[in-house]
Amino acid sequence: MVYTAVEIVFFLIVAAVLGLVLGWLLRGKSIRERLESQWRRLLDDERNNHRQTHDQLKRVKAENETLGENAKGLQAKIEKLERLPGEKLRLEKQLEELQGQLAKLEPVAGEHAQLSAERGELQARIDQLLPLQGENTELSAKLKTLQTQLAELETVRGENAQLKAQIDALGPLRDQIQGLRDKRESTEAQVQELNPLRAENQQLRDTVASLRKSLAQAQEGQTSAGTGASEPAPEAPPEALQGTPSAEDLHVRVKRIAERTSGGESAADDDLKQIRGVGPVIEKMLKAMGITSYRQIANFTNEDIDQVTAAMGSFRGRIRRDSWIDGAREEYRKKYGSDA
Image (cartoon, rainbow, N blue to C red; front, top):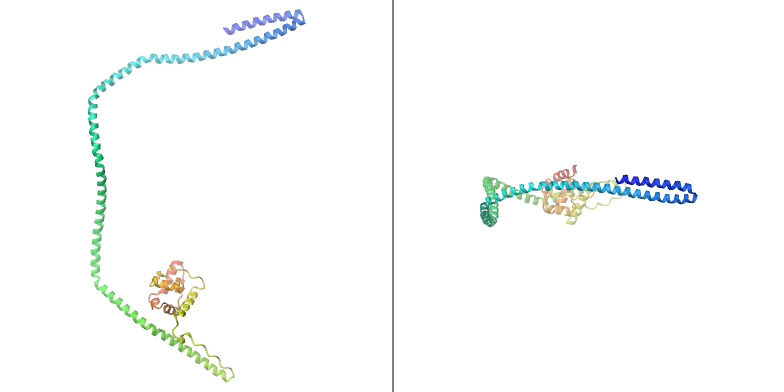
């Protein structure tokens, strides 16, 4: 309705303005100009008023919408408030029921207090018994361990009885083994006694060979003397004719054997104790003389064996008796996968 009134006012103003314009046109140019300016000013004012009125209408419409929403919220609250009396009655009934149940539970509360006291006493007793329970568990574990050990001891005792019976049954065999050991020691002593004779025999052989060679050279010299040739100078006597070699000479010879048997390469540092008959002492002696690898021992000749045995001094006959060469070849194949 407000908007309609504004439109009526607006049209009246426009009509008035048109009347003024017509009067202005009738009265002259100056009046026309003044009226035109006034008309324009009035028209602008009307436009501004119309705009302000339109804005106010928008604000009023927005406020009406807000009031409508507020009214809806108030209506919902009113509906909730209308339901409150029923809710109150329902809650009062529930309260009465709970009070009745509480009256019934009062004796139970006394029993509960008594049970709580008894529970506290039981908990105190349990706290006192907990350390004893831990000790009992530990003792049970120890008892099980002792029982297991006892069973193992019974088993070992039975095995010991069986071994004792077997040892008693092997008594004659042990005596035989001891006799064989005694015979072996006697044989080794005899062999050690024969070693000097063997060395002398070898020296005699070397001497005979040298004499034969000297005789052949003398015969050649006599033959060449008939033709006017000069007599050759006599050869220096071999090492066999110079007596038993010293320890230094033996070590020098073994060094040469070590260089030759290594094949012209740097000898490996093998575990010689893997060879049967080679212990820590013998291994130390061999490596001190330059024999450090399986390959060197595997390439020993009979003369090399005699030289190394003589350089070792003791342990005579061990190289051949314990088959060092075969053992070295076997260990070389195991370690390097080929023949030495």
